[in-house]
Length: 267
Image (cartoon, rainbow, N blue to C red; front, side, top):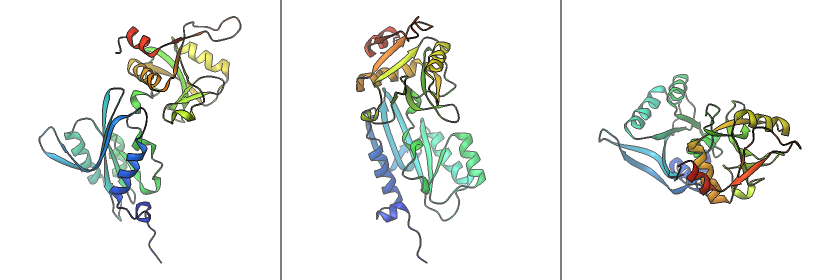
């Protein structure tokens, strides 16, 4: 019986080559600037010790640099907590690097618990190439979690089963702006902002949209929205009244990204 080949073996590649090409292609995003991907990257830690990472990539989004490292475990056995711990020690000695481990097999219980505790993402071969977590290390600056408080605004977005946003701003009447997708796939070019959580909830209830939630817009996220608007000719519309008009229409006013940046001292 012949051995089942891995995806990169089918392509005549080594594991690191496959991941490098996969990440390089996937990071070609209009919101990411100055990205680079390297194999066998050496990062000097705070201790002065050099740490080698199998795959390393970095980019700038909304003026904020992001770094991520992928450890490749091409083993015929499960990855253990000791292996996860060794990878974590390298990350700890470096500055703000998001960590991923890619295993050709799987992980034991201890490895999963340790990685979950320290925020290290575990990936297996059968998840490739559809691994959104590997590519979305930057989304905390443009996609809010359910715990973000609205300061200064609130917005409506698609929500996953855990109550977090899955990346699309809801423009009402079934339209969305999915900032994680290419612009030509957007179903609208408007992002609505509300001055209170309750007003956003009333708008969502009146519209009747399903699978959406109300999320807080922090100042950091607002800056990201302005960045999206600048790059993608996306309109920012602010609902300035707490309630609907007498005709049940939502009263909104369009504002330019540079106007908002100046008003909230985000430049």
